[in-house]
Length: 111
Image 1 (spheres, rainbow, N blue to C red):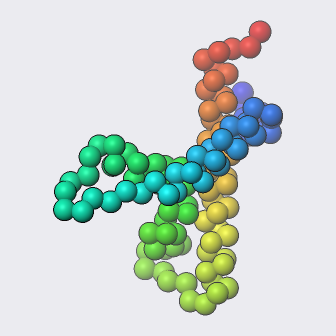
Image 2: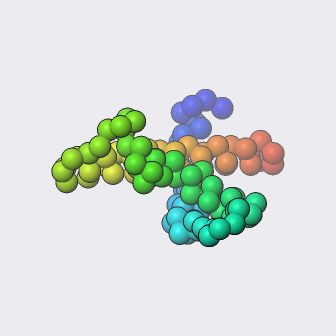
């Protein structure tokens, strides 16, 4: 399988992409906090899910922006940076959906 076939849109890839998009939308509000006690393993996992599902947007929300120490000034800079990070996440989600469909195809070959 070449790269062209790997990234070619298919119904299964689009369905997996939408599922990943829904996981991102639902997992963004999962952050939990512990007041005066250490986090349990479940709370650590729930806090790490948004970092796995959307690394670009989480970098933006953690104030890591484009470069370390770069702070956008003004609305235009902030909008450009937000669109850039969302675009990175969309590319990441589509590549992840292509990889998942490819792995499922390897595990369960079609006749």
